[in-house]
Image 1 (cartoon, rainbow, N blue to C red):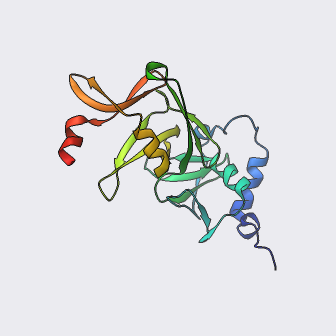
Image 2: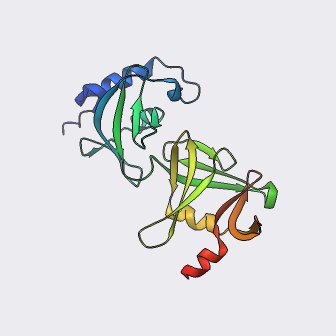
Image 3: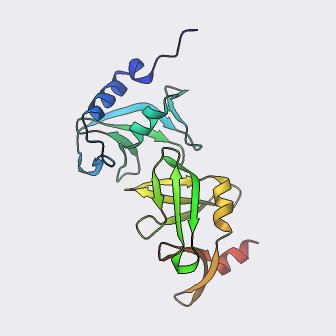
Length: 201
């Protein structure tokens, strides 16, 4: 059986991105917020809601390539997501969030509680003031939680992690009103007013 060609071999743009990344320092994510190259149009890459990356309609089957490209994602002021290097900036399609939180670790309780997440591309994200959590309603009226990874990029929690997280929810008074939320990293992360959730039950 002839092996599938690698995305970098099929698309010259992916090859250029890979080559540009090869020369960058490997410590920490690249400084994408400091890069302002000309926009080079769109590239046929889509990140599905389940975290799978597609190129020209086919899944990218090289995890190392996905992880590499995930480090040069950037959310633009107009809401689009781009892959950016010092030389190129190309728009991609993101169905929901660019990352998926697939593991959660919890240590301690109350004010001393620490919660950390691992994404599908192995980012390690603590739940704290710099990495807050937010909730949006899904199509069935439920809540979908997202944790901020970096810049304007967020990770959607899997359904299993959502259930684990909701077990930690407590009620606190915020500005004189009862709110549901959870404490982690020394911060109370408010989810919703208690009254608003009671009204939907």
